Amino acid sequence: MTGCPPIRVMIVDDHTMVRRGLATVLRTEPDCELVGEAGDGLEALALCEQIQPDVILMDLVMPRMDGRLATQAILERWPDIRIIVLTSFREKELVQGALQAGAIGYLLKTITTEELLLAIRAAQAGRQTLAPEAVQILQLAKQLEEMSHALVAGPADGSSLPELLARHVPAILPDCCVEIRGFPDQVLLAPPTRQPPLATSMWDWLQTQAEPHVFPPLVELPWGGSQPADMALVAVPILEPGGSVVMGSISAMSRRDGYAAAELLPALQAVAMQVASALHGANVYGETQRRQRVARELALAAQVQASFLPDAPPLVPGWQIAAALETAEETSGDFYDFVPLPAGRLGVLVADVADKGMAAALYMALCRTLIRTFAAEYDQRPALALAASNRRMLQDARTTWFVTACYGVLE
Figure 1 (cartoon, one colour):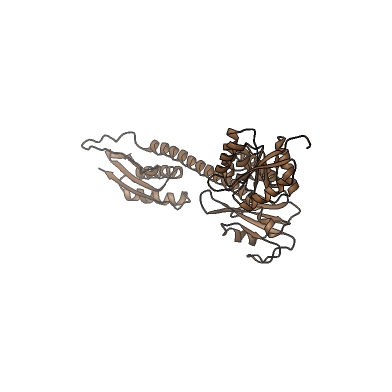
Figure 2 (spheres, helix red, strand yellow):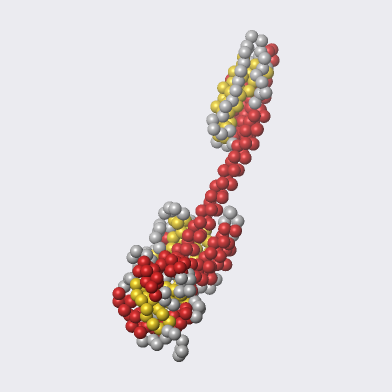
């Protein structure tokens, strides 16, 4: 480093003790020069007006203006400044937000002094430095995005969901044995062949759980037994989007202690949200298809019903006859008919099949045909015509439907 000017570094953190510790580290390095300190993003902006440092160590969560907004504002005015985020937080949104704002590095405050100094020198040279945790988070975000795109591009009925989960989930949770169920009994992702499936009693218990659970090694389990000594279990519910209805659950077994197993929760919850969205979409698609089938059936039933109605009332000397049929909301089995009889008589029929749709329309056709047939046979005795029709319908049709019919003969 001899002959090169020192790297001018500014510290931005709302904790005085953190600033003091970092300042002590920087003062021991001949190639680094501490040129300023700020307690929040607004102070950092004002200080940059005066000193314009080479590198800024930027905390994220601060009062007045946080680190992401400060990073974005500083780089808009001084794009040559290098900003390294130095924080205690590892959430995906914070990592992505800081890098999108223009930070060249993302480090956790658990790093060593040597790692921090290497990151400062790399930033000055224009090289990015990311904490392993940040790299893992970004890789997870990429894998989740790829799975999301695959789910969106898949069939709307969700038929490809098990295949897509088998392809993507092992990469998202590489050191876990993952099993995914849709309740009550749909296996969306089976465990590897070398691993037996989890107990049925566990899945029965999880159907009642709308919150995630972490079971460390050796802990007693609510559904009976205890967790193995070398394995932790994490269970995350798959909830109906926008509600608390449990659609399924994800269970992951891992060789971790309870604290380390809890670190799996963000990834498992992200997968659960995508599975919930896919299941919800498949349910909506299925319901839409069902409604469309019903609509098509009702339309066809309406055509069948209309085909059996008289084109016009008959002309009977001395009488004025009018008739019309208006169905209630949807096509039903209601119908009327006029039956020509000998000696100028006229049979008048009004009937209602106790159902609607295509089946009711076909039942209506059978009823109309039988009454017409027996009306001609018992042309002067309408009661016998109805009785004979009733016996024949009970004999020929295996159904619990019934027809309310009014039939009379006009002399």
